[in-house]
Image 1 (cartoon, one colour):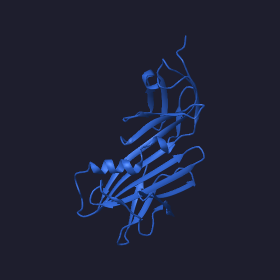
Image 2 (image 1 turned 30 degrees about the horizontal axis):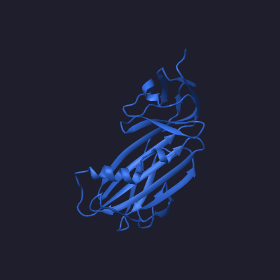
Image 3 (image 1 turned 135 degrees about the vertical axis):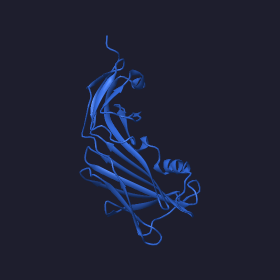
Image 4 (image 1 turned 90 degrees about the horizontal axis):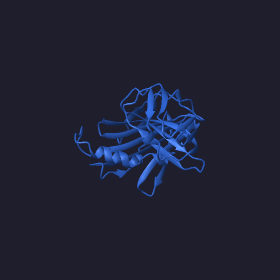
Amino acid sequence: MGIFRLSIAVSFLLLTGCQTKEAASGPKIFGSLYVRYLQDGGLLKAEASFFKGDSAQHAKPITILGGVSFQSSGMEHRNIQDKLIRYQYETTVVYPDEFTFQVQDDQGKSHQFQLQMPPVSQFILADTIYLDREMTLELLPAPQSPEEEVAFLFTDQTGKASLLEIPPPISHTLTLMPAQLNRLAPGTYQLYLVKKRKNFVNEGVYRISCEVEYYTEVKEVVIRMPAD
């Protein structure tokens, strides 16, 4: 499912490259923090990577003194073709209220970064979707922040997936128009609702891009041609 999001390492470079106000002189540490939770099975995955340089465009991948911890547990790291050092962690757990990454700077001082996003407790929609009709979905609770987004991930019986993103603002009731569904062929689909939050932290020498994704339990839906 990670194929359907832009690379965190790339997106944080684009985002930080647009920053014009610098809070401190000298080299910066640019980082990307990513958390994904699957409601089905309670699988929690976290990733982190860091780069250092005078600008985001010229920053180089770095390892962190003492490693990186997530929820007070150490993260494994991999060197990916000398272009990215990725710290990663996986476990099964009940969805927590907050996600905490901790790092040390070159002087051994600890820094924490917290990510938060309420989970989806329920989403309700019809079992059958007609391509000539509006589709209404109820989402509980509704997103509380303009940084929260929603996407629908449809997977057909051949394994082909289609992602339909809904930009904010988002209420507890979502309506999809036929024009948004016309790329889907009739058939049976597995449907995940994906809730996402992205934000940016500018603190001291740190420029951190953060993203949380929550995948609901799967629902089976049938998409049909217009009714007679």
